[in-house]
Length: 299
Ligand SMILES: Nc1nc2c(ncn2[C@@H]2O[C@H](COP(=O)(O)OP(=O)(O)OP(=O)(O)O)[C@@H](O)[C@H]2O)c(=O)[nH]1
Ligand SMILES: [Mg+2]
Image 1 (cartoon, protein in one colour):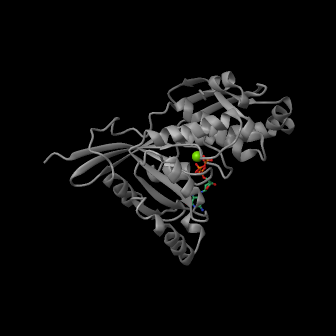
Image 2: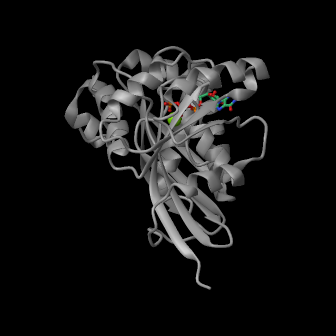
Image 3: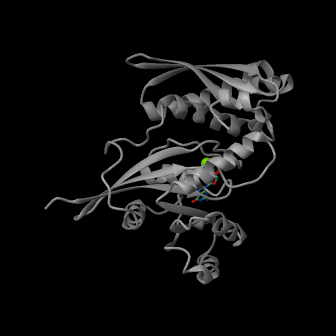
């Protein structure tokens, strides 16, 4: 008997640092999105595709990673909020990620934002960080909203290997549809865009305070040789003083950023990588529509 096919777009929504990008990497067992302990890491929508097969059906789940829901005046942050709202509006299903430590007000705000009432599942993330009793307390707090969500699932990327069970739960709620993409791809993003995110992750990791929020990355050129990937990229900052900090004493900080990013790219491609980084100043880019557009954030 032919299997039925299902497919759908699943928006992954939650406040900055809720664990959205980490959850998707964990779910597919491959690191393709950037993750940081600092909030506001993800700036743009990105898709991550997973397959789930059982006896009767074959499902393709197209997850959309989004920037965290937050409000700030800078044009870049408005773009980020818009990205999350667009992903929500276009979705067949929403995953709302609520870290287990959070109060319910973020969830209550989300319910108001979800004006089209798109069906959603709540994931209680970082559940490894609390004892069982605390987890049950949190689950109990959500009970009053049980008519709003489809499922409430505690998850942790630190323990557990429940990816299959979780995919099976999500696929139950997907519409019948032919698959949208080839069955063997993990994302439709260009490699260039993933490299950009990995370099941004290295910047977030190696610099403290506000510099990560005033910097971005442009991939200028990628040369694919059979056993070597050559990547040339610019790091864009707002001020000359930030350029100095990124480069660091004797170029040390820039070298560390380069090494970390190179390892992430090598891990993904399985190739040796040569990565050349340049730092350039573009005054006020986070507040300027044209500069944002040039960096890939069309607002
Ligand atoms: N202990 C624990 N930490 C987690 C878990 N999931 C994510 N984290 C950590 O939470 C931090 C934020 O993770 P991200 O995946 O970048 O969060 P995000 O929701 O994508 O954040 P933005 O892109 O800023 O909106 C990182 O330091 C992760 O390592 C988890 O299950 N357990
Ligand atoms: Mg993220």
